[in-house]
Length: 150
Length: 150
DNA sequence: CCTTGACCTAAAGTTAGGTTTAGCAATTAC
DNA sequence: GTAATTGCTAAACCTAACTTTAGGTCAAGG
Image (cartoon, rainbow over all chains, first blue to last red; front, top):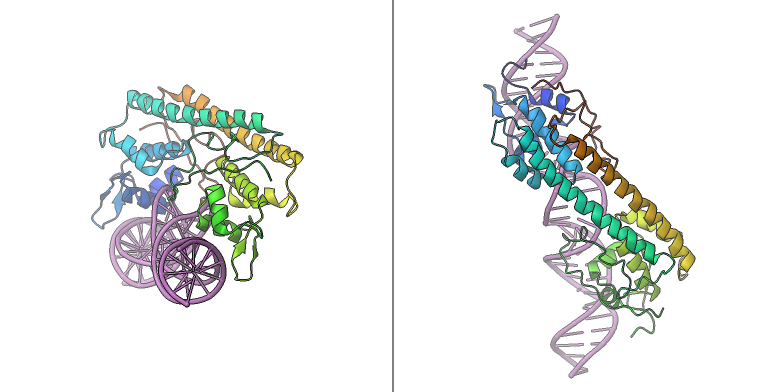
């Protein structure tokens, strides 16, 4: 049954992912199964690892293209070494730390604003407290003045 | 010009939001302008505050329905008091702290995993490190076993 | 052999938070 | 008074990460 590779259903069961998600990941270039005589996908056992990695990286907030870039650094078909994971983990760590940092700064700012209630667009420190948000909206999102009066 | 209320363009200029966004917020029930004789929207000056609040809350990661719920606690038309902001800020603070907590736990887990590289679905602590992710996907996303072998 | 269940593709649907477009009405500026 | 702005609505479009559907094929069990 797993002699000539895992079926997509097997892989779904092993990873907990939906079959449709696995097909989608293939379309995004995250995995690259071969096909059997009947045209069905067959996966290597190492793909379980690969998808596990995808799931974890997603929890760390990476997008699929970013994850793909990370995976592309692992030579296709090679089982990742500890060194590979250590390198990747460092990347995760940096991303995580940056996010924590942003939130802590927001939190600090909030502390200094509680009880103020001004919400003035030009004087309230709550605007643009970090960097994480609003980088994908199309509009310019410039900030203009707002008089404290009223 | 602002005698009988602000036009949507005025409000857009004062808040930095796109006109289309303001209309969208109205559709979501975040603001409730009246109409002038010609059918155009007219806003109170307090709506600048209201939208400022929306923008800040979004930076804190709240969804529009959540923000609406928060705003609904402020009696319509009443200018929010310091007590209102203090209460809301506390809510922000709790949400922020929870997010920071989750990230810190992920970070700690990651530390303990660097150099391990197992990524085993049943033994690696990197799965479900927190709570923030994956609560909106349709599928059950259950996690099944994965033998360390291979 | 035949049925059932797993698989295939392509395309459309989903959610959030908006933006863009089309076609038309109201306001404002000169 | 008239042209340029600004505003109006409804509907379509956008991204990310998938799921669902439709219509058809493959594989395994009895």
